[in-house]
Image (cartoon, rainbow, N blue to C red; front, top):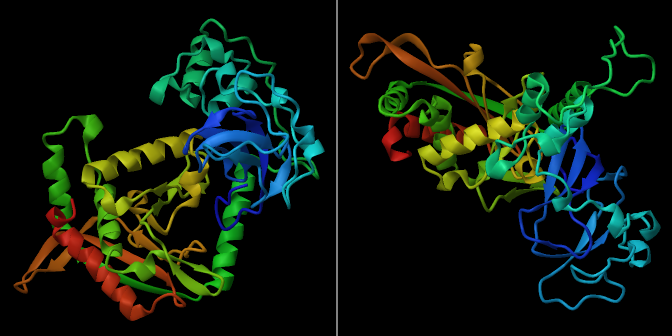
Amino acid sequence: MPSLGADMEAGTLVAWRKRPGERVTRGEIVAELDTDKGVIEVESFHDGVIETLLVAEGERVPVGTPLARIQAPGAPPPPGAPPPPGAAAPSVAGAPSVAGAPSPAAAPSAAAAPSAAAAPRSSPAARRLARELGVDLGAVRGTGPGGVITHDDVAAVRRDGAPGATPPAPARVPPAAPPPGASPTPGERMRRAIAAAMERSSREVPHYHVSLTIDARAATELVARENESRPIERRLVVGALLLRAVAAALRRFPEMNARWEDGRVVPAAEVHLGVAIALRDGGLLVPAIEHADRLGLDATMEALADLTRRARSGELRSGDLSRGTLTVTSLGERGVDAVAGLVYPPQVALVGFGRVAPRPWVDEAGGLCVRPVLTITLAADHRASDGHRGGLFLTEIARGLKQPETIR
């Protein structure tokens, strides 16, 4: 059971996408989890063959609990392992147990685990909406990557009355307030998860904040110049350049790209920028752009657009939410001038950007002018760094934005 954030303690296994005897590759989806942040797809972190499923569908288990056992390529199958693909797969009831895992008797049989080929490829959000509306996924044309059926595809079928969409049950008017003891709604669950993480951050992390206000003319002019010759679907936003500046600065300040674990700072081997994304129905998710320091401006823009789309359509994977090494948040589009946030443990730093807005400014020659101005704020863990290093880190981010050609 992967941890999808400091606030997560347990999750419910909704469905298996693989069964014993089937091969999996690193990054392939093997299961779906229901968490306080929604239904998340879980990918495999190894190549091999599914040997045993250790947790039954519908079971809620703590973070860290083994969900399945994967046999490495070329390794001899252990006694009692399922037969290879194509042979009749026996029940896993006799499979050996793993320390800390549920008893084998509770594990599902191979026959109970759905095959990935048994149903059209679709996102968890699409399947959930299809069940609610009574839509047959077999009649839906997927428009996602590789033909995957998305939430919007199902909604379009129901709206247009296409063949295969059966009428849903009559709508039930919800009560004005949930009855006592009622289960919290997904939105309430997410707010509770956010509250738990921020309470922990406020309680455990000795914060310090430093900020810097800069002339952002060079950054905004580069984006405007690039967009003059680009089609709409490939246009840049200033946010992509802000992410590039942070990722480039982290190369020189590894103490900001780290985690606080077991009473010490553990520098991260890679730069995976967590991006705070607000959801349309409320709530917040922080998926990560992997290897952000290796990406150019165009690739960063593509990654940002992809994460935003998948976060808002319920198509994120477990790795998207668990790999972040530093979080970037921006409320500029909401008219906010500056953001002094809280570190998201076990990370040790968060960078906040306000809006780019015209302000009176004194130029290099001492003259008064009007320039597009941006405020950058660092929230950091005093156990991992200090205000001196934090100030230098902000100065490095600012240098990249003042000379954007050097980081694009």
